[in-house]
Length: 134
Image 1 (cartoon, rainbow, N blue to C red):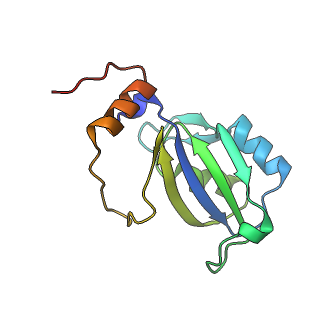
Image 2: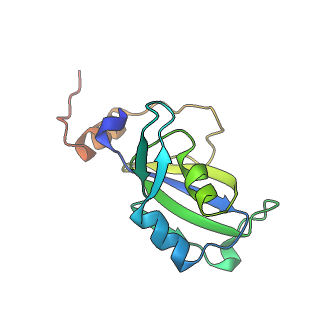
Image 3: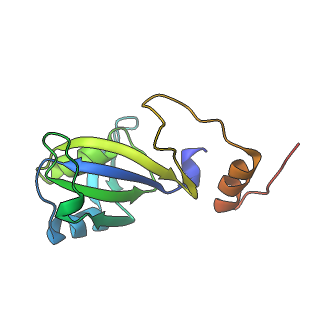
C-alpha cells in the first residue's frame, strides 16, 4: 500500500529506559524530524501509544519498557528517531499490524507473506478504495 494512504502501522517497541506520561504526550503531539529524502523538517507523531505493564516486558537484553505504538507515516527509522529525540534507545522493534491486518508472529525479518484476496479487500476498504477481484 502506498504511503500516501497513511495506513496505520502498529509496532511493539522495546526501549532501554522507562517511558513516562510526558514521553507519551510528546510522541502523540509530534516530534520534528528531518525527512531524509526531502531534507525538510516534518512533524512525526504517533496516533496511539500503550505502555505495557512491567510484568509483560520482554526478556530481551536491554529492554526496560515495551510500548505498542501506531503511526501512519513511515519516514526512514521514524520510531527509532522519535525515541532518540527523547533520549531513549530502541533495542527491539517489530511491526505487528498494518491497517486491519495482523502480521503472523512467525514472519521473520525480511520475509513476505502473500495476501489473500480477502486481505487485499480489507486493506483497500480501509483506505476507501473499491474492492476489485479479477
